[in-house]
Amino acid sequence: MLFDALRFSLRPGMTDAPVRDRSDLASAARKIEYVAPEEIRAAIERLAQVSYGVSPGDVANGACRLLGFARVTDEMRAVVEKERDTLIADGRLVLKGESLVVA
Image (cartoon, rainbow, N blue to C red):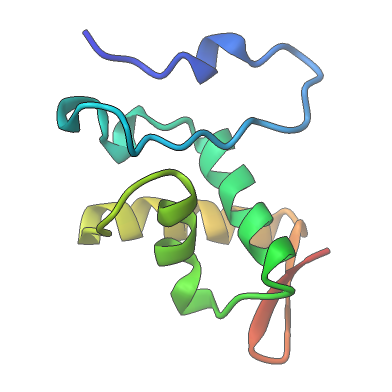
């Protein structure tokens, strides 16, 4: 059974999850459901930081690219946008003008 090793490598008190590129993995292992929510949120935050802000609608494409996915399906978009909304609700991302930026 495939699983995401990140879930087992995060230790209590860790605040930053590593963002890993999955582009070299077999297609069977490249599924958004195998990516820990903490890693998806880390990819979103990195995207917002290096881009000096990102449009809310562009978050899924950019975060998935950082995670090594070439295409973004509707399912992937829904998963990433859920994590984007979690970051906004937690105050880790804020909307400034039309861009999300790291708080």
